[in-house]
Image (tube, rainbow, N blue to C red):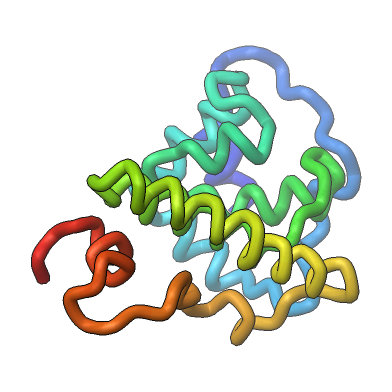
Length: 166
């Protein structure tokens, strides 16, 4: 795996020494086979090169903006583990990404504003409070929350569906 990463990142310049913590696995549940599968993703070499060269900033915000955020989730976890990025709860980061996509799909500006305010004031606040106590569990962030109660055909349901008929 080291040889594959070296080939991906090599650009003819002498290699820069990596922090010792970068060689550690990303935690107790890290699986080498999973890393190899991830490396086989055709988008990964470009992503790693862009991160290494600074074409993509080493910030949570830049990684959140990437079109294929699932591909970027693993290196972001590694960067947090190594201390390159500040630690943030992964479930909150995934919720924020989901929320941004959901809000972008909402065509009615009033519904979008209502959902944005509710998600930030209620949902994110609750998630952050739970994350302050300890890491959020898989069940806490495994499915997007129902942001507002609704009945079939209600404006809230239409806003959640992006004003697009199912």
